[in-house]
Amino acid sequence: MFAAASLTKTFTALGKAFEAEHPGTTIVFSFAGSSDLVTQITGGAPADVFASADEANMTKLTDQDLIDGAPELFATNVLQIAVPAGNPAGVTSLEDLADPSITTVVCAPQVPCGAATERVEAAAGVTIPAVSEESSVTDVLGKVTSGQADAGLVYVTDVVGSSGAVEGVDFPESADAVNTYPIGLVADASNTEVAQAFIDYVLSAEGQEVLADAGFGPA
Image (tube, rainbow, N blue to C red; front, side):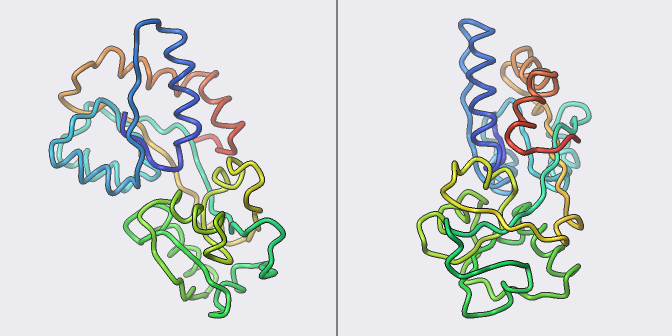
């Protein structure tokens, strides 16, 4: 199962629950930035399921007939500003991140959270002088959590899943960059029956409840 980094906690939980309901089944996950996973799949890496943090990266695979059938949309996510506990830099808005004295970390443009960052910058008329562009949203979160950055643009779900290690700052422009998550069966999957069963589980009421509890919105 290849899945976007922002799905790490929820899909790990879903995988354990799925295994409990299907004795003898083992789910092995590979979590990374969606664009990196696309590169791996197009390069021939063995995968049964791909869950992307945006539709654009999924389209790269469907255009090459590397996804069997039409992908299913299963969740949405929006950006939030993550700051260390206590918000020492006093960040209150997206505009604050234009201040070069506030060290901000973002995702690289080819990653879904990076593409979303570019959209909110355009919507707000703000340019963020980021000190680094990371290959996954979990890397951005890690730099904020460790105190290497004053702020980082991550998903709401990353803040929820941090267990208080970071705080979230809402900003209205996030509504201009809602990411929709698709999931699909990889062509030539080695175990199509179990792979499809897992996709169905993600789409089920039980799977959707787990995603909602983590902060994801409905697709």
